[in-house]
Image (tube, rainbow, N blue to C red; front, top):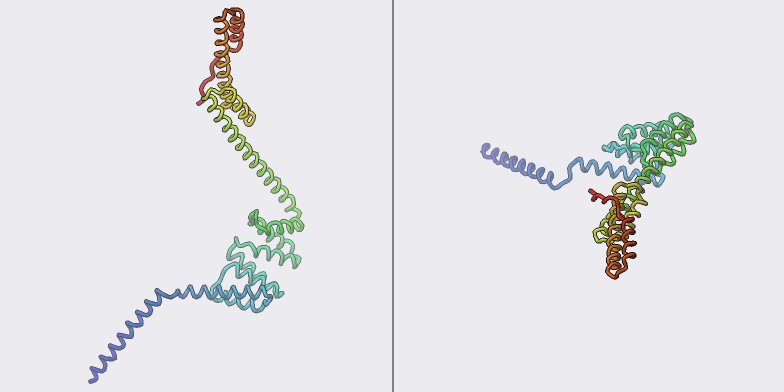
Length: 283
């Protein structure tokens, strides 16, 4: 009797164990992980803190922010938000601590640099203010909307920065000018090449005057370009050969009609327009 009772209990225990294992397996597939719930909770508190901060409820905002940190939010952003909240509450020492913590957490997150600089400036710690304004300026991108404000503060606080900034502005202006000149040059070269290609096409069609005009337009854009000079010479050569052919036909017509003197005169003109040497084909 005892043995039979023990076996039933054992079977019940076994079934419950199997059920528990299966339940855990199913939950692990269909439910978010513990870390996901953890992160969502900390983010939720951070957002609540930001909302309260925007409303001016600083004590409540700070409570939410610190709760988010407790739950694992260790981002530079929340440390900076906590620093701002402490500063608005007039607890500047704690504000400084959290601004510094934000910078140590992520040196590329820029707001705490500016906040620290203004905090030190408020307490007449000029050198420290300059230090963090400079850090902010050096890390900023050119399209950073805060860059101009930081430059304004540094120009006012730091005489040595004025010369450095002027030099930087001149270098940037020269670089921009050089870039634009290069773009203009590339555009001119492109336009010149278009004229050159049209000139070659006109040469193929024996439209020598139009070809010559295209090569001349190309040379205006990029003077002394050997390829363009050669193209113009080919057009001139072809144009003269065509003129010689037409004048020769005129001379032959004059001879056939018995106007020998006129034909002789035309032949003499032909000698003046014969080109000295042919122009090589371009590569």
